[in-house]
Image 1 (cartoon, rainbow, N blue to C red):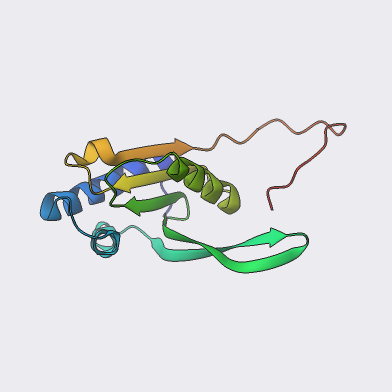
Image 2: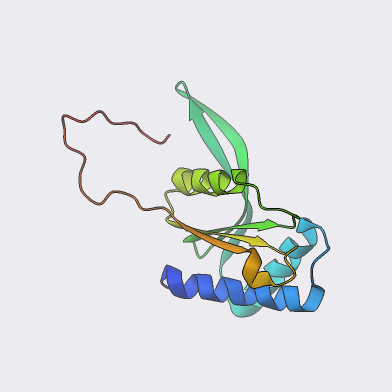
Length: 142
């Protein structure tokens, strides 16, 4: 059963809070990913872990260029970090993932933050709802 993205992101954040409460900051991303996987399963959330994405370049498809940490319920991209400082490239990374998956909502969860609420970033990709006028040049995403 699919649930709206807002409710789903709350459930994902709740799972991340459980992991952070149990482990705190200071571990590797891979440890948090595995524990988050356990929490998702316990919560009954459907997810794909380490989902690969390809890229089309000059008419050729290049498989497995990107690896997303999680896609939850087929609706939300979740990227796990354990970093000291936030880098703006992380926002660009998530935006790229949203465009390539045609999904609208993504979460970055930085488990290194002493207070997890300070390490969560939610991004929403607003896609145009109006059709592109036929005279405007189109630029496909892939």
